[in-house]
Picture (cartoon, one colour):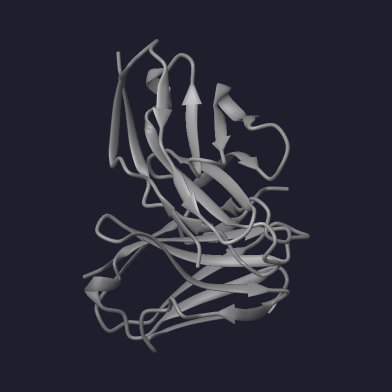
Length: 112
Length: 115
């Protein structure tokens, strides 16, 4: 397996624009997590899914953030509208049950 | 509630010396503990985990961790540090008996190994 695949690796966008981050988890994994990492706040869990169902989205900062998992092999994290304070590295991770997680390479988002 | 603490933001060690990165945990039941490493511009990589059994757990790249129930600690160790070990290290933990609990991550410790 190629591991968790995220796209794009880098995204630069203007404030107010919609941003969509994509994730393909490892086949067979039933948990999918979205994290955000910044110097100030460290690693934050935004939302996680179990068997494609969102379980806990309490970490999603605002209504501008939304996440979907339409099937077991794909998830998106959308920010609309984007703001400069959303600039961060966003990670997707997957795991089988709640064992060790496998992280993607991340998407570095810059909102100008 | 569960929590994981990494009391040191940064650890400095000379190459060839032993290293320790500290982690303490607080869970209501039996702990399920993990260590991850993050190299620059990369995602976190799993190093090792403790579920049950031997208190000394061996993992990737020569790392090991010692589980200490009385001190509620799970420190990461390596007998001889390499410059290439310089990275950000994360401890994570959850209640093993809590079927739906997901791991809580510490804030991370930056390890710097000097040549």
